Length: 234
Image (cartoon, rainbow, N blue to C red; front, side, top):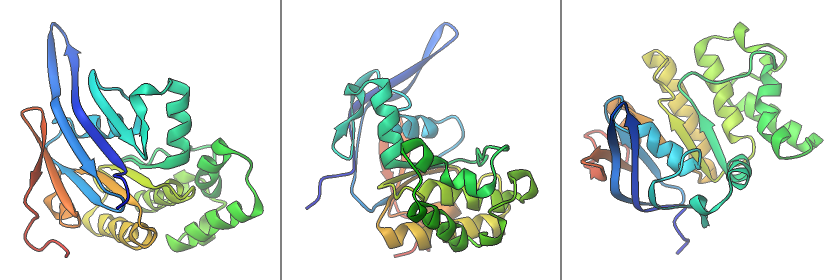
């Protein structure tokens, strides 16, 4: 059996808020297998985004160890964590985070530019992904010419262009209407499941959480597995 792609062991993490410390995680542990879809469900401010920051190495635990794809992130230098993210992790955010001065195609190509030279084959992959998300004719447009749903579809293509083993999504449908949000989720289903990519997704929506293999919540500083919701996909 393959090793887990994510392992959190005895994680503690808190933040100073004025004169008091807010503890988010207290000896929390988690194992995510390759290809799993694990969704973190809960209200705003509960620490869901903190989990994504720890898994990506953007933030470090106060105590404990975070291992992703066999690499203990908290033992790496900041530079090595950055390089690791570029090569192994894809990100989708609530507010798209597209660069306004780059065209749609240039935005999708950005992760490849950060990791090395763009070959014709890699450019073809970016254009193929734009076709997959229904935007093959918009590669030369700038983000401000696209609707919110179109921008999020570009963000999905950008997250997948370097074939990451792990995709982290922070409220990816939170800024979209229900129909457009469902279109984005359908893209996840079609593109990520096909490649066997692991997805860790933060949401406050129980409807979105129905797509998960496992649902987690944060309770008393621990990651607690919640029952799958009625109507969840098998």
